[in-house]
Length: 350
Ligand SMILES: Cc1cc2nc3c(=O)[nH]c(=O)nc-3n(C[C@H](O)[C@H](O)[C@H](O)COP(=O)(O)O)c2cc1C
Image 1 (cartoon, rainbow, N blue to C red):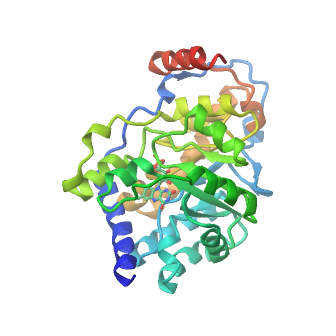
Image 2: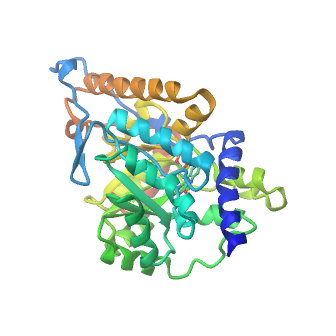
Image 3: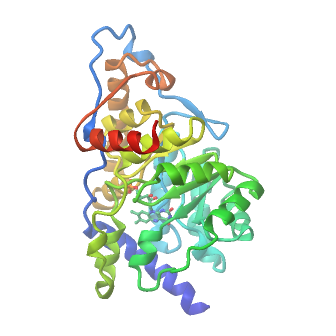
C-alpha cells in the first residue's frame, strides 16, 4: 500500500516534468473554423461582458482552469498559483486527480489549499471514471467541491506500463455516480476527444456536463513515451479527435448538455470559436501550466489578462455584446475540419 501510494506521487511529479519536455499534439481543428468580420456591431466596447453563470455562481468569463495537479509538495505549490489565478479572474478551477490523497493527509492538503484560496469561487473535484461512489464522496468533501470531474484516460492508461487494462463497466459506474453524487458530474476526456456516439451514451446515462478534452494540445502519448521508454506508443501519436471536431459532434449529439471545450486551447480566437460553435465554456490546461512553470506567476497573470481582453475585442468585432449573443454568430468550416464534418453529416444523417 505504502509503495503504491508513493508510486502515484512519483508519477504526478514525473507527468509535470515530461509534460514540459513534450510538445502540443498540433491540429485542434480551430484553424479551419472561419469567423466573419461584422462592420456594424452596434455595440460599445466598454459594455461587452463575458460574465455568465456556472454551477449557480457568477463567473467573470466562460473559461476555467482544468484538472492538472496536486498530491506532492511541488504540485501543491502549482495548485496554489493556479488557484490565485482563478481568484484574480473569478473563474472556476479543477484540481488534479485526488486518488493520491485518500490515504495521505499531507497529499490532501495540496488539494485543500485550492479551496482555501478560492474560498467563494468554483472548485471542482477530480478522479477517474472507474472509482466507486465512496471515493467520489471523499473527493467532493475534501475540497467542498461545486462539481466533480470523472476523467476518462484510456489512451494514457494503455501507454503506461503500470496502467489499467480493464475498462469494463465504466459507463454503468458513471451512471451510478451521476445519480448519487450530491454535486453535478462532469465527464471529461484528457486529450483524445469525445465522439458523437460517446456523448449520446453519456447523456443517456444521466450526465449533464461533459468536457470534450480533444486532441491538439497536451499529448499524453508523448508524455508517457518520454516517461517510460520501454513502453513507447508512437503508433498512437495521431490518435484522437481534434477538439473542434469533437465539439461539433458532441453538440449534435445533445442540444442541452453543458459542453466544456478543452484540448489545446491557447488563443482568444479559439475560445470565441468554441462559443460560436455552441460550446458553453472553454478550459485551459497545458497552455497555462506551461506559462506558469516556464515564465512564472506574473507571466501567467499577464497571459490571462491579455486573453480575456482579446476575447472581448473579438466579441465586438462579431457584434456580440455577451456570451449568449456569441451563440448566434454563424461560422464557416474549411479544410480538414470542413471535410470531416461533411463525412460526419453523411454518416449520422444530421
Ligand atoms: C501535467 C498534467 C497533468 C494532468 N493531470 C490530470 C488529472 O489529474 N486529471 C484529469 O482529469 N486531467 C489531467 N490532465 C489533463 C487536462 O485536464 C486536460 O484534459 C488535457 O491536458 C487536455 O487539455 P490541454 O490540451 O488544454 O492541456 C493533466 C494535464 C497535464 C498537462
